[in-house]
Image (cartoon, rainbow, N blue to C red):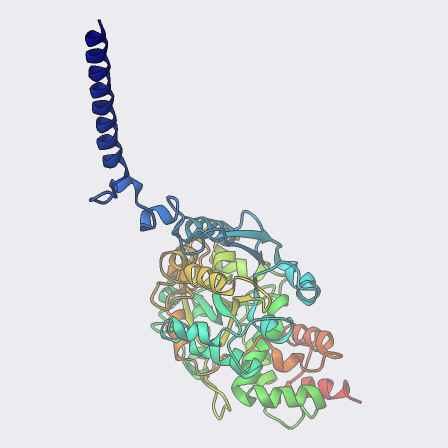
Length: 440
């Protein structure tokens, strides 16, 4: 009996020792360092795991505010909205556009002075340069994208002359001169656009003989039309000097006024001129007049007002004998600028370039019937030749700036220009004498 108990105790001890040995072996395997890397899915720090899908866009999370001079529904506003959506899809930056309309200039100065949340503004480039505070110097950013290679030197240089640096990017270039109906010219056997005053008079007579009024003239643009003649004879600096101080009599301003009076006496203005805007220019669409001196937007206005498609041509204002400036062309622009206090100036600049180059600029030129901001693109067909004319200009002629130097007389002189086209002055000397009387 004792022997059996001893054997049972010995057998139990052996079994316990075996169990302990087995547990020690399994635990050793669990605590060893792994000899291979963990599975790929457990790795950290890879490029894919740093950002969620779409988070690698350049300006993800950036929001820009733009104040536009257009109104909702206008072709320009539509293109800007579409471009903003495309820019957001490409870069992640959201552009919030507030379409303020043409009166945006009435609120911009105070808003910029107060540093309201605005990144981009859109307005006339002269106002941007000379009126608004807190506008960013874009020189370095423009150089970085080689802006000079596709833009208009005459417009850029004008801004730099005013401000000392480039502070805006052209969105909608403008040009002024004679816009004419090619079909009316062909019917009158005028084979080329007139380059000199003698050629211009010859063209007018041929057009009149064909039964069409040579020149349309609306009252809103009488000062603009006369200004072109003055610039040819005097140049802009001389006009500004006379406008400030008087002394018109005895200068070539008398001949400039006489040229307009001669056009009236020869019957070269369409019946009713100067009409209340836009009655006279619309006569081109109705086949009653052949040409008008105005800005390039006149082509779209006439076509839209008369529901026609005029076969438009463009030529610079003709040169005069002994003129002081026989080559300049009116040039202007609606442009885009960035506030100095914008927290995302580079993103704002990139959107501006996105909008004013390539496909979006071409879409703007096509749908808004305008000149492209990117000279590599094509102008709307009715503005053929406008890109080349702007590129050739060393310095743009301003919009009557010489006649606007004297703010006290601006409105009076504009009214006198209307009277000049109405034939109320006997000759150029009488007109200049009436101007000088304003300074006494």
